[in-house]
Length: 183
Image 1: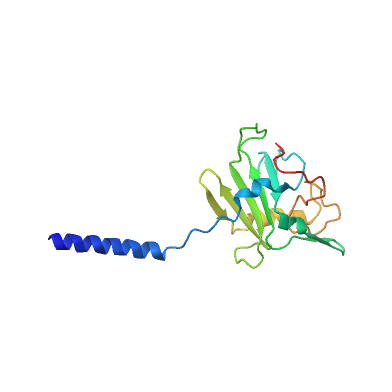
Image 2 (image 1 turned 135 degrees about the horizontal axis):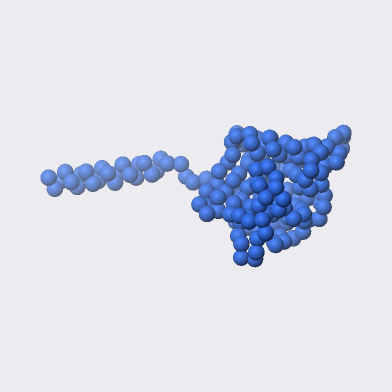
């Protein structure tokens, strides 16, 4: 009886090792921990209601790669962000955060046209900061809304010429690009 218990325990440990060795490794975060030091894409106070984000205070930042976007001629103009661009938007739980308030969520766009989960050449990501969970949005809600950035729109620079803006509403340099942490 004692040998059967030992054999059963060994088999259980072996099975557990097999299961854990076959499981998928955790996907590394697509939003780097230092993103809060990136430049902001606009100095416009983003506390007004917009679809998908309500009226919660938002701060949009872009990595250095994204600042290398190109503006092509033609009619309409074509703005293109390079592969590896990351645009991260802090979403606060309130409209007017104080110094102690922290974001509750990050939404991000990662330019990765060859990724099978990409929509419009971008991965659309939501990160729940309380849970620490990142989700790639595979539906079309995000890209359909951001498709409006590719024509005249009511936000930021308003895209007066109807440029193809690569799904980005706040093009760096169309108002003032300011250093991180404007609040």
